[in-house]
Image (cartoon, rainbow, N blue to C red; front, side, top):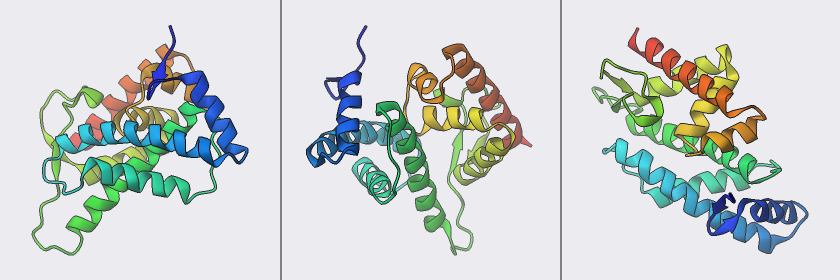
Length: 192
């Protein structure tokens, strides 16, 4: 079974990434065009969950790509590109929320529930602050970096279990275990 992204086989996307890394600007434009479509879709899902965020999906995707272009990172393949994009998307959303609530007395931080499909181990239905989720994800990273990466790639990057397994060079069952552990750990920490 061939996996496709933006109508292109994943192997061909990796070839385009390699051409871009070798200096082909046309390949870079094609890759970032496909990445933009993917990020808009992912951002649309994230923003739907946080109704009061005033960003548009295209704005989130654009800012994430600008941040990616502003770094000296090199990408080995499509999966690595998506993993970095997940980090940048998380940064865009968190930075927006921080600036939105900074200096506002009585401003109540945005609250979400962890009954989202991506973080489904929460059974209490209690809402948690998005910024607290970000901070707790950073703490999880100190405790178990790979579990935090798996949560981030799933939640912010919209990556499949197979893509995450490839990016982290682990098996799909390992990704599943990390997801279960990460979800449980985050829920417990946020509930306390």
